[in-house]
Amino acid sequence: MDDIKIIQSMIDESNNIVFFSGAGVSTESGLKDFRSKDGIYSIKLKYDRTPEYMLSKTCFYNDTEMFYDFYKKYMNCLNVEPNITHKYLKQLENMGKLNCIVTQNIDGLHTKAGNKKVYEIHGTIYKNHCIKCNKEYDAEYVFKSIGIPKCKCGGIIKPNVVLYEEMLPENEYENSIKAISNADMLIVAGTSLTVYPASYMVNYFRGKYLVIINLDKTEYDHKADLVINKKLGEVFSKLK
Image 1 (cartoon, rainbow, N blue to C red):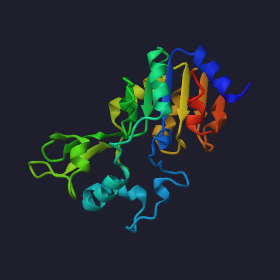
Image 2 (cartoon, rainbow, N blue to C red):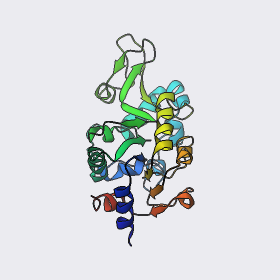
Image 3 (cartoon, helix red, strand yellow):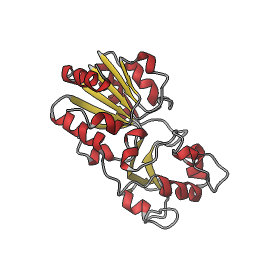
């Protein structure tokens, strides 16, 4: 039996599926992932800094202009649309099989595709706040601003995304662990599973089927009931 028939059979048997998504889920919408050979981390930057630094808490507070120069260039996904994987997950939710999506992505594409229960453990570009008065701003305001986006009170606006050196949002993290712990099937897709603590969440799964779909191998492959090393579009376009 081929991979598609196996995963379809697993989905047909399951009624409490959790989908754990990484940057690879959004690459077929035109966004770059981080760690692949063509990813953001392979880009030669004009600054003598690593991409990890550019997306760090230290960079935001100490080199704010540099932070926003990078952030606006590489994190802007306002005009990006959901792809076949996002649309399939909406279909799976409509069927009553998908309990929730736990995502490392900040692009908001799962929500844009119509999924109702999405835990964004690394935050989202669509929410921003002033670090001085806490007033909220939308993504359009941030990405269309000139230079460092400022609040009307004069404070700097910060994206509600989890930067390096920051903790995951407690509520999203706890809800994600609870969902994964109670799932009968966990589909992990488009992630190298190398970023802690998000990657460790897979260890909370106690259900029947663990499926990992990723172009490259992951260190969790040996725990999976099925590993598929294909483009996500090739897989989800064939499922029903």
